[in-house]
Length: 123
Image 1 (cartoon, helix red, strand yellow):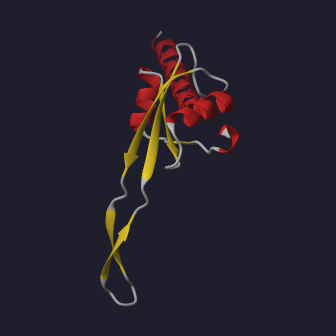
Image 2: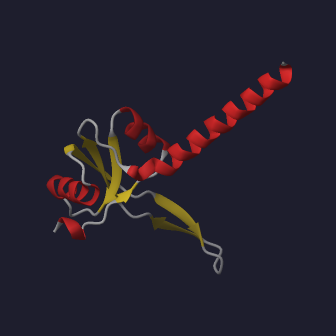
């Protein structure tokens, strides 16, 4: 059953901060899925240990849509979302934000090269 559950990671600044500081990863899941199913799906898909799972339902916002034909404002509704905050056991990590971390490492390496080059030119 856990293999059929689709886990969509939420890529936001808040989710990135939680993953770096508290080892918590945020996923968007279907409404009918419970905590145990999310824990099993994360453990089987990523081969990590799950410490705890918290669920939060976020209702969709109402938004105003302008109809181009009639030039009237109509109200639309965004879909509801259910978030799963998954805390992993100590020492486990997910490769969700690997591209962000690689980019920051490359940037630091480039800055180090520039600093080294500048110090050579001063001498």
